[in-house]
Length: 379
Image (cartoon, rainbow, N blue to C red):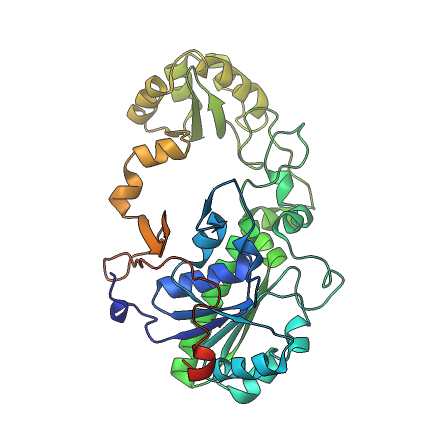
């Protein structure tokens, strides 16, 4: 689906003041669905994620992270402290359908582009905001950074084993979830505007989406006398689930086991029948320890064959090479090539299909200021 006229957000104008990941992830989803996204960047420097290197890999002198987050967008480079530049930017603000920002609370107001100021000249605007910890309260001035939000949210105590310390997620889960939640809110307000003719403001924060991520477990805790779950000492995966739920080493790799009757597992693996007959939660660690010893004695493929035949929910643990080699991403059409001048790179696509086709765009992330002509001409 390369023809954007087929996309549901074709013609939507999005002005994105945000940087790093949370806000730009929302803008990325909107762009993938056909919106025209113009990224507002600092003149001479741009979004700092242009130069944040996850590895030594860089494309066209810029971070692969920046390219991953900002494909299919355009860029205006302005000095937000310059009265002349701010006045030019109002040309785009007045006609934008959506304005996004993820500065700390109060910053956009000081720059003159807070919600009330924008609404005054663009009453139908949908204004989206991501913060670290909300727009008021005791944490309002704390740095809204993914790892720090994870640390404050309680989520770090759900991974790892009973005797481990807190374990951080291996990816910026708060930023991605905040961007996804903001996208949901923006789309909801766009629907309301289409039906009732009014715009509005949608806000989320890293701490809110991390609380929502834990909604099942937090609900249990809130209604169970605030009893903190004890993580499994062996092969941990979920603090509230009984054996065999976990990840186990095999002779040549690892296998994840979600659900399966212990008597069937005992028959397949040779696990002691008496051990398999114990209470799956009360004796969780003992059962897992016994299962772990058995699973080390044979390769993953052998175990998987038995598990599949017995309808035990299990899967081999793959790395990225294994995922790609499996062919599933190709089957689902989840990888695309994007280009810009000397830039050419492979990246993912929007994880939904529209009318049976997955949207794609061949445009890589923008050069800094590549759309500065819009400051004079408008959209």
